[in-house]
Figure: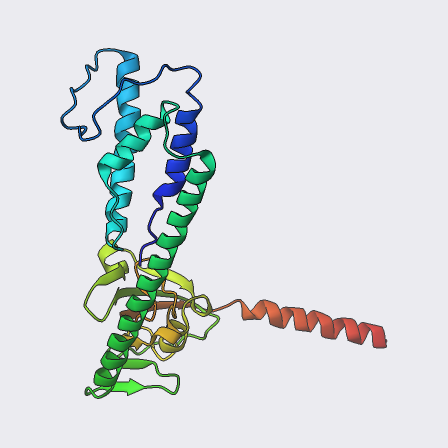
Length: 276
């Protein structure tokens, strides 16, 4: 799940900044609490100062609005008129809350949002785990699917005739990764450029699976969460997600083993010299 932005930090900064202007600005004219921004007369943006002021307010409003919209998904709905009332009162000394009360309210708000995020993440992870378990059970029964001891599932789509890589090798591959619902989360094919990386520096399902492939082969891997990104997920990949990859192994670049042999030879020569 995407990490939700929290508006309280912005609110703290905004209100602190507005309160700091109290000594420089006169009290704002009284406004009717029921009057909305739409109903107020639009300002004339015919000067540098007017444009700057309006741009600051508009960007702040859009940021807060988009953030609150995301948090409404958690069941938290804040009244826009009340927010605007607080902003207006921040220009004056007429605020209905002390600094201590503001901090207490914002801290409580943050804690509540964090609790809701954690609850939603746990629910989503549990649902993803159930969905993935069912998918693995069904896929394992399909023709051509092999299940390894670790739980990795693979199917040969087209066989190759080249060498097979070792875990320490650098491989070049084309691949497409999807979730069980068909959502593509990464694809070198779509980018039009193959990827190269050390095979022992990727998720365990890749490290194990690609070692089964000869160069030129194309396999489908179904990777359980414990061989992928686990309970936490990564980026757009949710926690407990089963991953499906179609991988074509294009090339292998072996590690520089001769250098290690050379080092051993030098050590042996040193020993012989010492013996003499």
